Length: 500
Image (cartoon, rainbow, N blue to C red):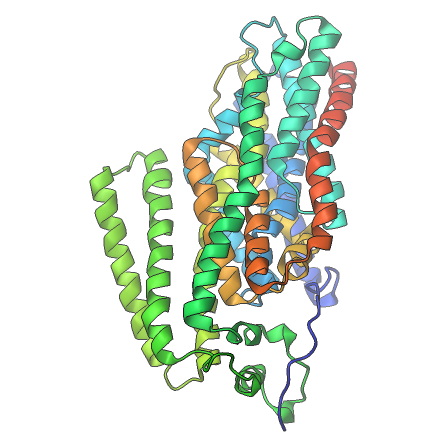
């Protein structure tokens, strides 16, 4: 019986709430509860016994709530391509996120944390009360988190960077006007302008990079028709007697007529895929050497770093070349699927690391600023980020991905364009490189915009980009900053009234 491809469909990942997920729900819920209790008890000693307990507990809740929603929106956005392509299951994505997102935050997130915490509002010439500053940061966390929750429930991938900056601006202006200590001059509009420029460039750069990378992969590796055979969930359901999913992939690919003679050969896989993998390995190595290890006081010289990158790139090239040769007994479509699935796991890990280094700061930065005020009684331009605070936010982030992240995963992984391992690899590699470059420079760009741009770039290559869906997403992008600003403004008044 000849197997055929089913009509293209956009099938979201299974909804949360299945009975076999109940233990996972209980485990993640219990983990978050235990973490919050433990951190709160630890923070009592950290800030001192004289600090107001209500403010401290509220700050812990707001910080964890913000991290929870970052997980549900931004981390879900980051892993949407991997889950949508069928390369990773939801549980596998959770495991990778748990390791690489938190590692990226701990190793490489310091610079961006400082920028978000103190680079938006200029308090040098403003006689603001330290507790009012704490209320600003608390309200910013609340405003950003509430908007992120709304957007996540709608399935809109939005920028947590936009949200936290909007919350800080709204709360700061409100305090300035209410207390008469400042006004529009409190906000460093030049900094906001520079960030706004990066917001515009982010999707363009992500789209261009993915368009080039995936275009080359499709031209030299996949051919003109092979890419449409690489996604298991696009295949029609079959009974056990009709064969496995793997058999369907191979049979369906063999039934697809080639355009221009051939849909690909093993020699093409052995020639190009190892080179592509080596380039990806060099990018990932650069992330670790020039960002993560620098924060650990283990930085290497530029020449030394280049030599290490060259060695790792060469080793990866050789390993993938040997791996590709072992797949000669597989059909070309099946071998291609296996190779790019493995490669997408590594790019997903790299993007998780770069994403963690950039966006966990959106929760930890304001959180650490409030803890510093409660501990010292004064404002400081910089504040040490406690390891316990980073770890608590990291756990909340993973829990948020599990509980509320699936609608965003459906949007990113299946609805903007059809994703398979090769196109998912291209999008993730392009986005990871650009996000990490921004993180190294200390500029808080939007990883959401970068990855969405990369997915659209892939869709442009296949002429399958869903521009209709981009309309509400783009509208949500525009609304994010002012919505968070309004909520932050209202929130800071409420906090100051109740706790001031």
